[in-house]
Length: 548
Image (cartoon, rainbow, N blue to C red; front, side, top):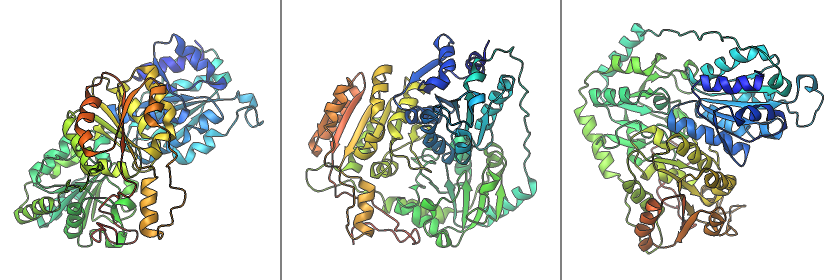
């Protein structure tokens, strides 16, 4: 067995069944081993597409995603995907080819110091210079990627190491660290909960990463506590609860932002006080004590001091804190907030109102459907107006905000869950970022449904230019977009364009009934904005709801 053959065997031993990638010279031995190695590989049409597909696969399945690329430009094209995985805490192992060890540092063809380049956007990075290191490195890479706060790990693999012969040996066993409940902090947290009159759950993506959704919902039910979520936390709380207030922050719901500003105790679960959540930090939840539960101790006190901070696994600490609370008036107030500030889908005229279309799409989708988003106005509309009851069903680039994320993420999700409906919601700007992955959909025969909201603008940037840059619309006009339906047809994908409200219902019927990939191109007004909006530098309760 050579090193490349061992890599394929070791991936299978780690439980990997699907990888994404793009071949090239320095990774060719691994691709030769993949040829008959019994591991499914999906050729994407760009290395960034492969990385984003692996992220989508990991997020939809809960398993470690794997992507592969060659050295030089192949490896550098993975970097955005690594940063995406790091900022959203996604377990990912990326394998990059490298020039032979003897050529490293000589400016050889397609040589880049990807190890050095990756250090700021990975949880850990390895360069393997001896084939005997492979068993430990691969085992450790998967352990690091998935344990604690998940994240991406890079393995840089010189070509001569891939070709070297060796006899595999058993890797070192991972050390399982036992966790115990910190009794002192638990008692302090219980005292804060018992004393609170207006407690509020603030839930982030860490809950889904920890597979702690059931524990969180049990905690919410036992305490009766109202709750809000971040963009990545959507789907963790029961969306049918009368005291679920939706997403908070810059484009959060009015009910969520008002409740946060009024609460006297904030129970932060798997969240990190992101700047898009807090707005003006010193004015965020000004009356609240803080209980912060997070697997990453570095998050405790990073942006907001916690009165109690606990890093024990959520599946242990949440049941230990679950106690009935006497907060009837606060629950009633939050339920009234949710009712009084519910979104209104009535919209004048015949033009398509994107929030209403997305709401109707959500109502028609089965509960196990996966929705992948790109970044922009449509992303916020999905978060505001579509319903999710599992965080693995809502794939959105949160921390990095990567345009071009949605299409390859939908591909990865469909390959992880082929029996479930997978829908991409994209915008015309984002769609063009990785449009080449339509070729991946065709090659793999994936039945991904695509809803493309086209306002012929970079909508979110245009909105900010309108509101905060005196309407100076610099480089946000996309009126020279291609004919998207014709473009999809070039890849063998059916599609149609709709332009008015009356066309929505029959078009959604055709989209969801079609036995194959389908593109629904939706023309919307370039003047439509996402509301509410917390302007920069102000407290979250000072939301804008219309143009000044």
